[in-house]
Length: 379
Image 1 (cartoon, rainbow, N blue to C red):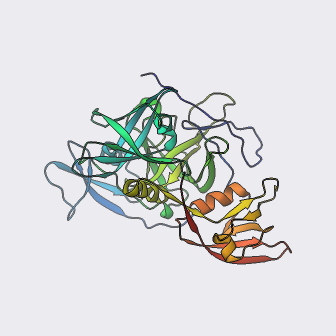
Image 2: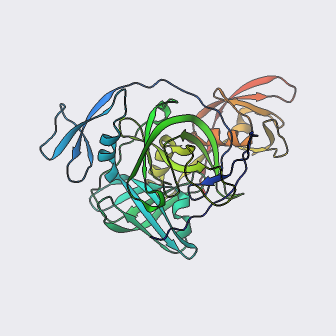
Image 3: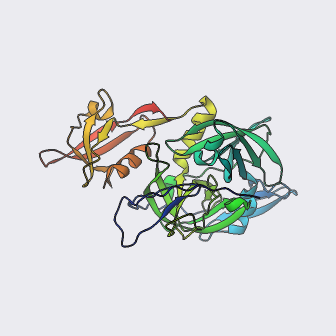
């Protein structure tokens, strides 16, 4: 299979001791950020894996039918073999052909009915075919299905595809807000077109601000950082927790090369599934998605934080009384170091959510504002 991969070089928005070339998994950039941790519950879940389709089902009373095998998922150690067997059938390969070339990516089956199924992936995997071209989805069985784009969200670098085949195994959703640094994770996807590739690692950091895309058309991601090997073609694939539930959409890598693309160096980035699930559901249900709005414009010449240059009249910040000239110090306790981290943090909320924003006021004092975020259509 001939694989065509594109890359976009961006600079770190934070100084480092060495120059690092950055590449999307099909194009990305990375900005410095912070990491936080919470303590999730630890438990073992008994599940049944269909011996033919490898689909995962909840074990009723700890037992399975003759056509399914009982496995333990979760607990103190991750069972990569059981997770791979249970989830591989829910992760697909995506082949894209367009006038600008061809490429491969990955996706996860997130909804199905009797006649069709919906697949969550990255926008950058399919955007070249949005205005002409073809998309084919390859199931784990080898079946190749034509796919259509239901909707795309460039703001979050997400897209949903539809195939006219129903009753496919749907991936189980986890809760990305319950992840902790050090948690074991598994990545499944099709790096370089190699379908159903499984790698494992840990959550290396949380809330890592990542920007992807070209200048003026960036997506902002409040990313999960992982050292599980992610390579070009893994884009849109699943990052799974110890219970085999999707907690992230694999989207970007950092590389040390200064030109072209190289493989994983243990710096991979995933879109938290809590964000991706909201976007996917909106696209499937309505054909479009939304984003939260604070209603501020930042001073791009200011280098010591996220300074507000002007406000959008009638939007959330204006209604809350946040002043022009103020500098965002923190959002719900998370320190803001620059305008990228501010944008990423706001984008991590759903429209209508409340956020506590600490502002360094023009007179040097600090003041807390409780803001109800607005809503706008995503691009």
